[in-house]
Image (cartoon, rainbow, N blue to C red):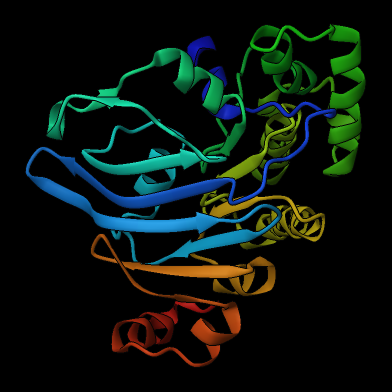
Length: 275
């Protein structure tokens, strides 16, 4: 990860701004291909303000790709990506389609924080420096104010005593909690989490699960890709089941996990995924 990736991992929210009505993120008819391989085949979803939307499905179903398209880390070939009512402007068609306004992309990304599966902490920076880097470098905020906020966020995720440690000195669970603190330090309007527990041992997973549950209880807008069905059931307002690039079924956690309507979802839940 380099400095140019900073805007892909953080966001900003003016404390004085009046939050607009409507969903934070809306996707309409999204298609995404890698060459001849179509990963998303016309997917739509809505992430209302203060809601947690979880994306579940087998590996290769398009979950992480959809999340990366939301954050414009991947270019889609067709469909709309809308952030707080503002649609991304596109130029070109098909595999040649690209965002038409780079300034718009940078601005929208500074309101979305992404937490990656592999933490992506900068190894040459302390944990505190990792958390502070984007707000200071990208947003130009006062380092003293950012440091105070960063230390508070590290305490919030339970690693306040690790501020001066290096990433290599932390466990995987501690590194992921540091990555969450880094994302939160940008004060995002939405938090995007891509399999945040899948690279961790079961014992360390619970450290991160607790943090995610705490964030959900604060009514933060989150899009969560996860294989942990218990986590999805516990924190979600809405669950989307993707199968082969399409939404096979969606609804409340009680509906999807308690009374799945489709045979594909029943097979998925019975195949040992509901852990």
